[in-house]
Length: 334
Image 1: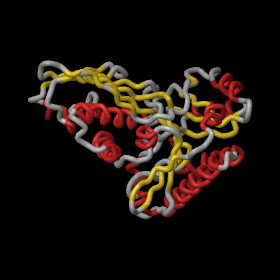
Image 2: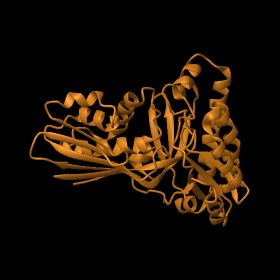
Image 3: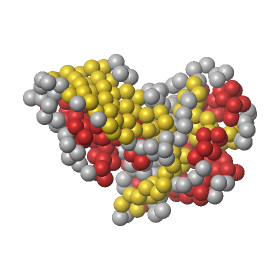
Image 4: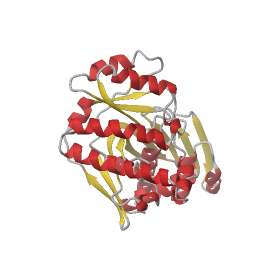
């Protein structure tokens, strides 16, 4: 049997970091806005006639082997930790060869690890006879990824991986709800340039430090998160109204607030790329994910996307990603 699963990465437009439990509970109306990318994390599982388990990451060039009887060893593997922990959680009873790979650059800040988590759950769950209902996938992904990164995981990244398209994720005391934003997604494709800086992400935001400061009652941090929440509200409203002037205004206002949250969110090279893009037709910039490297999403003035792309490619190491909005989320076939 061969099972193939995949899930899309994402660009987060507004509301990042407020999606960590229980931070969002202190900010009523907390939400995040994001859209899924056609750059996908992919998993291929081929069952075997023996008891061998072979796990392979093509991106890292790493291969781990064990057997069904020694599966507990995977709980402590650190070479391809996400894959190993997922396999140990599902505990298949037959041998298999699993290959994982991503179409996104390593450390891009566009949620490749969360997309991989969803793709792994989709494939492994099918392999073990659909043991879990799909509504549990996001909870499983967040819980297991938290044991990998060893800090609380935010929830927003699993929703574009699972559902695709453009989303507003609402965080409430009675649960998390995903709203499909029915917008002209072709306009996102016409307006946004996504540039990989060439620098793998180096955790511009230390979620654990922010988590502790927030729980300890840091008043400045609380005010920053209030602004993060408001930016997400404004972004949702602007997209639904097809008001691209307001989208640009919201992004411009949010950018310095994110830098207040974590000064290391940008690097000198990222600052140069932002300056160059703004001088050549970009209206606003959004550092993807936790920053400290990775990708930057640029909103371009109408008809200026190619000008922005041309200017950015002049910077050494920068790469313009080729993408579309992924209308499909998790896909599993066998």
